[in-house]
Amino acid sequence: MTRDTLFLLAPGFFDNERREYCPECAEISGLLSYYPAIKDSLDIVYQPIAKPRADIVALLGDKNQNCPTLVLSQGSPSFENCGIMQKNGHCFINNARDIGRYYSQRFGTAVPRGTGPI
Image: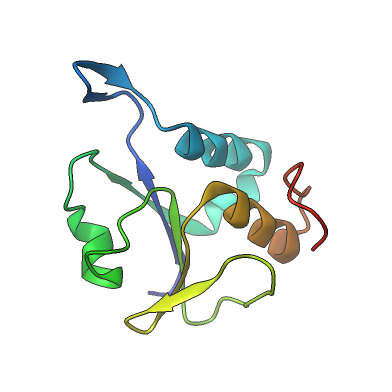
């Protein structure tokens, strides 16, 4: 991977006998609309609500299928206090607030409210 990859659930998926969206994925989509330079720096892959989510499983294994998940490329910087984990040789972040904290350190964006000091 030469660019970071962001895995999101597709908006408007069908589950529980109705159309739904993932609030955490919507939070990250909103962040990307606030800061388009971030969106331009990564690849976005939409995943189905149903598991297994093959694209994520191929990189991180069966136990790491959460969305949103940001998989960092080999050249991406690492920062403390961003919830970065490792699996199968990949560094990744698997929740919206930690992804927001990572972007605040990497791109100088605002920090998600309520996440404490970086």
